Figure 1: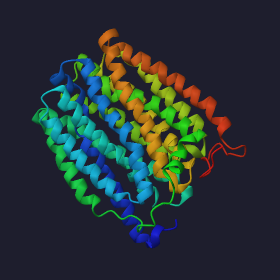
Figure 2: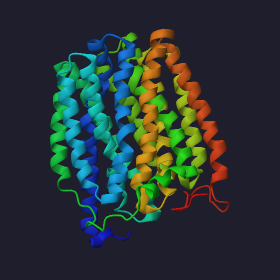
Figure 3: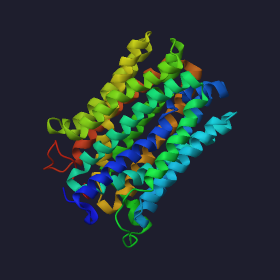
Figure 4: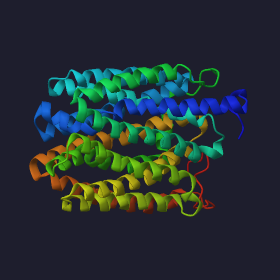
Length: 408
């Protein structure tokens, strides 16, 4: 491994470790209250539609802000600044939720959490800068693995804290995690400032014409549509209907995140040695589809945990590889813009998923939310698998990623 920006190997390892640690706090500050968020929203707002609308605010903020943050990050060649602002918005979201008394306040608070999550665009590019280009998939699996581990711990602890301290506990803890993360982020190292990019806005936005980036983004829209409709959105409400407590809601999300974390690590490190990326992505969508179609038949919490695990494993297989394809499809100096484009587009799914599923739940019943999302995932998986192969170079090894900067 070649150390970037003249770091010795020890300094490089410290930078990588600190970035892992900071990323863990970045997401834990949100995921600490995620297990109880849907029931908390319903308790204050009183309807399925409001639950969908408020959760959709998280994706809406990312839809609006991820592309601008990516462009600004590339133009200014700064990543750390955005990470610091991310922690400020993490804290603001937790404070807002803690004191929310109506749907509007809930919406604005979750919107603030979405602005924080938008800062993940330059965060991932910062981490990728510590690795040589051929290690891109490896670096994405590593950083996503560390975030999944923190999300697992936060989910589990959040459920227990809510059980012990009632609804307010996870929000207070989220504020504390954001404060610690902000202090850690101040110590992050990034490459010395370069001359501001001479790329025009038109040149940066041209990444949106890349066929592989577009297909990866469209596929991820459906992926996030199902994630925010079911595991994060309405599965906790279904679990409450069959008798889950606040603590068991934490375990429910834990059962999703643990296999998700394992699959996230394997998808970019071990499994591509034996299987092509398109096949792994298709398999991920099929795991998601199967779990969602089976979910309404579940009447016991133990079985529901298993269904959640299957869903989490599928998402963990597909998501890092879709992200890798999106980054590999463009040149290095356009990666923050490409990541902004990718994450902003899939935020459409994060926004539309819970809103549309809330309407479906209100009008057609909760069970139809899972059935419709399962069929959607099934179709999206085969659509991606059919369309991606013609876009890959003729001499493309099925077990390798797309060459940097190539746009077929």
